[in-house]
Image (cartoon, rainbow, N blue to C red; front, side):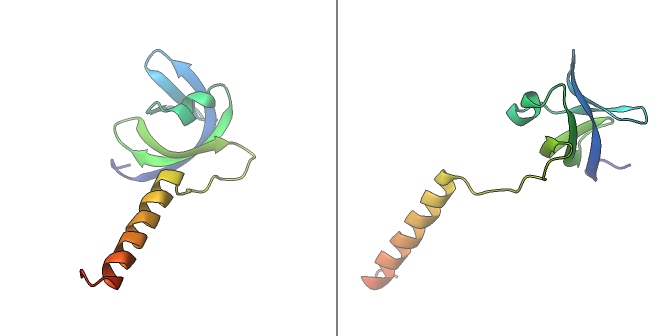
Length: 99
């Protein structure tokens, strides 16, 4: 499998000396790049989506407990405020003729 390929796997997430490790049910494992979301799920059976970033490394984009609903990406409050401020500023500039 080439690097940068999308990966979707299910397995047991364990902590190892090299960092989080996803052990697959049929044997084999993937090294997962550590993050807060990954660290919260150590010891759980999980599903993950990510991109292959090395020989056995995955850059995790989404991770969730097996048997639960897949999480959706949400825009955070900071991004909403920035977008709102940009729209308000653009309207202000358009109304007062600066564009």
